[in-house]
Structures are given as structure tokens and as C-alpha cells.
Image 1 (cartoon, rainbow, N blue to C red):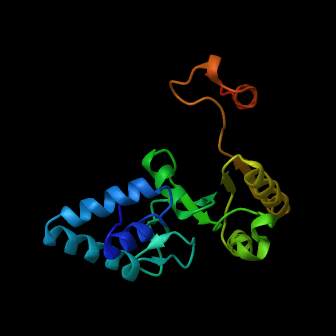
Image 2 (cartoon, rainbow, N blue to C red; image 1 turned 30 degrees about the vertical axis):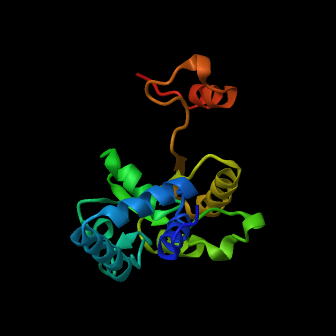
Length: 198
């Protein structure tokens, strides 16, 4: 069956979004097509505002509507503690826990020579400048524990330690509700090494 051109174009564009395959893109396009005009106009308005109003914080590179994000402007945050993350979306995950009260620094990715991501394409120089100018006592590396994340963490630790700043990493191990029987050896090993005391 031939799909009419505007619908096919919508499917093609929606399928360019991350985690959206052709079938999901088709379902979304058909849902939008069936929706009331007001719903579609509201979606278009929200997407336009998202792109036009959101900017990058000039301090930590988080998403913001001002030059500095709400976290950087919040004087109640622990200003001696910086959590380094790969992407701004990681901040959302950490903030949902309500367990961390320090500041952040978004690298903009991880070191990945095969993908063309070297030290110059990440916000590493800006992190070091913050550590040299602010009174930071600890840096928490909250970077994904894959090969590139591990390499990035080791590289950052090597740069940060000579500055006299303590470097820590988020714990890794079994998820809440996880089952030892189904966990891989590396995860169980990390859980044992990163054990906490009661």
C-alpha cells in the first residue's frame, strides 16, 4: 500500500528521533493525524518553545532558560561539591533521587576516538577552570560504566587529583529488587567491591 506523501514525510521525520523505529513513527504520525487541530497546534507550539527558549547554562552546561541554570543560582546547594555527568539529561535522573545537593558539570559526552570525540570536544577544560577558581573539595564522577565512560573517568581523575580535589565515583552494583542469580559476574564483583557498611 502506498502512503500519501505528507504522511510518509511525517513518518520519515519522526523515525529520525532516538528510540523511534518505523512502526512507532507510523503510529505517532497516525495519532497526530487523527488528533484535534488544537492538540496539534499545542504540540507544535510546545516544540517551538522548547527549541527557542531553552539555552545552555554558562557555568555547568545544564539546560536553562537564563544564562545560569536554577541549580547554579541556588545558594542552598553545596558549592564545594561538583557532580560530573555526560549529558544534561543525567542531571534529571540524579535530581529525581533527592539525594544529591551539590552542583553539576556536563561534559557533553565521553572520550570516544572512534566517534571523533576527543578532549577538545568535551567541556573538560571548563571543568578544570572551575576547579581552579572555585573552592571545590570533591568531584563525583557520575559517568556511565562502559568502556568509553571508564576511560573518561580515569582521564578526569588523573587531571583532577593534582589539584588537591577529592575524586569519587557513583557506586555500581545490583539494582534494588535485583536478583543475584541473574546478575553478571562483573556487576556482582562491583557490588562486592563497592559495598557499604551498616
